[in-house]
Image 1 (cartoon, one colour):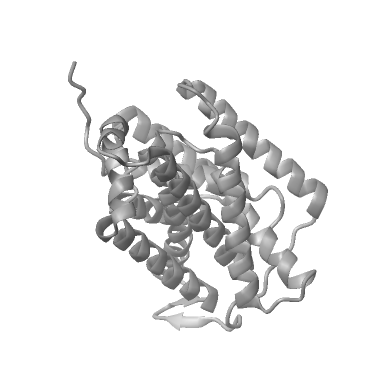
Image 2: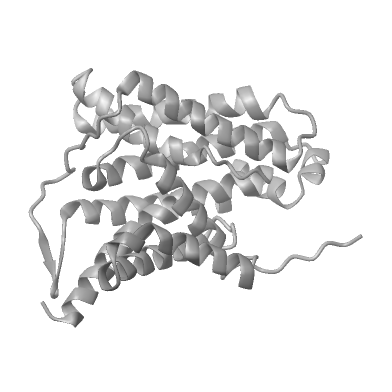
Length: 294
């Protein structure tokens, strides 16, 4: 395989990985835009998607589609419960306190999952076989096509919800100005509730569709969550097309770096990109600089 064929293969793999990062990054952006909270427990909700699916498949012997549905519902319930027990009771919390709480929630969820599910790594079955498909000179697994399709569907549904539904518009109003939204009759607490529910469902879906390729265990959420956070930062925490492009860019650069330089730098590349973005353009590549009137 010559260098051009290798690059084509890296690009295909990178786009698939980047789609997962984009889906996780949108979850970060939704919560941030509604509450100004960076939810560092988002990665554990990604992990729970895969682990719940494994439980429903193996322990309850559910068919795969039903197991996936129940896993998304269960992970969403965990995310909502986390918001109810840790975020909602706080009165005027500082950003630092919120960060510490979400990190503590991440550690707690990971620890409980380890105690209940063990430390073993598990693989979910591929959705539609594992026979490689040729795309030009590159090969792609059917699971990659599922990743592209489900990610595109989730992003489109997210776009429609925020643009054309009353609840979505109310959440956008809270993102612009929570106090003004409350003054015109919007239930801000309910919008925060919805933001955690949507974010949790997107994160769990990401964990489920990537599990047949990367496998799942109690600790996979740490790195996936951090890379999703990087995608959100690159996109300017917009929750829209910017975050999608941020995830795809991150996935492609990570894949090219691992293939052309060394796989040992695969994880480091994401954080190098994050640091460069924060130093050079803190509002993200696709975000607009904000000014505050006083």
